Image (tube, rainbow, N blue to C red; front, side, top):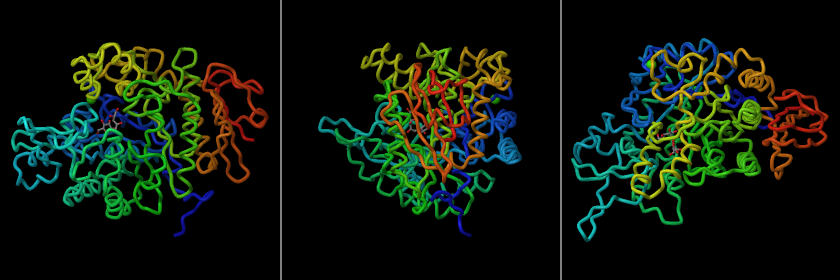
Amino acid sequence: MAQESINGYTRHWWKEAVVYQIYPRSFQDSNGDGIGDLPGITSRLDYLKNLGVDVLWLSPHYDSPNADNGYDIRDYRKVMREFGTMQDFDDLLAGVKGRGMRMIVDLVANHTSDEHAWFVESRKSKDNPYRDYYLWRPGKPQPDGQLLPPNNFGSAFSGPAWTLDASTGEYYLHLFAEKQPDLNWDNPKVRDEVYDLMRFWLDKGVDGFRMDVIPFISKDAAFPDVLPHESQVHINANGPHLHEYLREMNDRVLSHYDCTTVGEAHGITIEDTPQLVDERRHELNMIFNFDTVRLNRDGRNWRRWSLPELKAIYTRQDVALGKHSWNTIFLANHDNPRLVSAFGDDSPEYREKSAKLLVTMLLTLKGTPYLYQGDELGMTNYPFRSIEEYDDIEAKNAWAHDVLTGYESAEHYLENLAKVSRDHARTPMQWDASANAGFTSGSKPWLAVNPNYTGINAAQVVADPYSVYQFTRNLLALRKATLALVYGDFEDMAPEHPSLFLYERTLGDERYLIALNFSRDTVALPEPVANGRVVLSNTEGKFGELRGWEARIVLA
Ligand code: TEU
Ligand code: CA
């Protein structure tokens, strides 16, 4: 059957969908143990349906010892005890489908937990049948008798990426925590296992996968050192067999289902993105490039970013992709600070306006938008002060590794962490003004609720016709009704402007102009925007100008 095409793009449900990410641990607790769970999510499906999102992405819900909140899987075919049972999962999926929505799950297959049965076996002996499921290498003996790791790779969570295992005297690779050993994808048995477990979830009816650090799956088996001028992330993301394995996965699994895939792709440049997502290559549907969410970083420190830099990324993405590729639009997730705190203005005066502006941008750029839970409330960063308040293994390891050793001052470290911590996104969802924001009926949520929950919560925004939630809802409806906002051509009309993001989306003779003021100061509007018919705006606008953080969509 011929595929319908619009403006040169093949039409697909996953291009027209808006995805909403759920971090199950922090969404809704149903049994008072302080940990969000699957029945909790099921109980909130009407809220999500009412908002108007099409697809839910569930962060890992699998059995895990939670060294990294479920990104360390112990059993891919079991539900995390704290989250419920397989029946709870089936009920959730049925509830999603029953409301005409879809659900994708997280596939974390670059690594497992060290408590996964494969690794438990693998570490036992060099001739164990599971030995080659992981990446074991001998250390490098030094003249002074010292043993060094096989190469100089560092772990994303501090320290070397290799740990010496006493039982066999060899090192295993872990690009993340020690409890997250990397799988050896060069072993065909490993790939068979992964394809099998993918089929297990697809056969249950899930609509696809968000694939954790998927470009890291193929390693140069010789493990050369990273040279001073090289980037380890770039090396890890561009291994020799990456495309071969993705095509095999597509051929053997994905192509047999009506599903979608989105790869988390740290280390893949925008220019290289088509190599993963061009539809003629049969690999993935879309990826998350890190350019936008790393704009506010200098290493792990906070960096002031500028609007022209952000705009340039979207233009680069549009130019690099062409009509055979597709991509994501996102600025927040469970690894990043809150949308409005990182990219907007979370002061009391501008929080709601700037949150609406950001959602306007996310829902009108070209690509599939991904919203993170709480974005629709304009949830903000948590006022973290001391290291004890954090939970994240990344933050705790770096503290031990760099601050306790005197390499970095506690003050400098905490000042930056308070801006970039992954825990900002992980504080519980704020449902109402009751104790613990209605997240849990228990006395203690696993991570503290943001004290601003009495003023910022779902009950309040659902009732308020001018809230971020209602605005997001209107935008979602507009997008659903407007193919120009999905497939229309994109052009930045003022790339150099320091505070105005002004772009058009055109499809045939339909021309939408989107004007976003990323500052507190009023900016003048060019004529076609000023004269167009206002379709949606976050302020009672004035002719010819945009006030602080004003967003306006017009039909020219
Ligand atoms: O993230 C991988 C990744 O590339 C990161 O951005 C990483 O989170 C970074 O070190 C944070 O500053 C994925 C998951 O999204 C993340 O939650 C996991 O911790 C990680 O993989 C390991 O599974
Ligand atoms: Ca619970």
